[in-house]
Image (cartoon, rainbow, N blue to C red):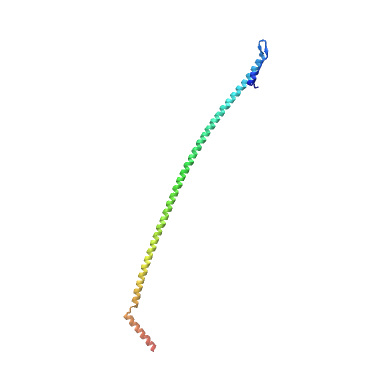
Length: 167
């Protein structure tokens, strides 16, 4: 049963010789006590529910704060990892460039060495050709020089050939 403020203000009791009817007033007071009791119980229930909701809200706020802190920590860790990875990648790149430069330098040095060896071989070949030509020239001169014994041998051979023809 519910009694509103308007019902309470507009309630009128029947009158008797000594005032309002006691029975109606008592009955109304009982109804009013029931309504006030129910209202008090509902009020208590609402307060309990409000406390529970406030506790739940506090817990959710704590969770929200924890999640926010976790998210911030995670973001900071991700940023730190990115910075570290970038640094490490740059170091690896620098190291690879240094190795590549060293390899290219070794290649250039080896190429220069090979060119020097080729030039040395060309000089040796030229020297060898000059020496060989000189040796051949001296042998040719020795061959062309007239040797008295050789001349005698040739003269005797020609005589022998003549004699063979004459026979």
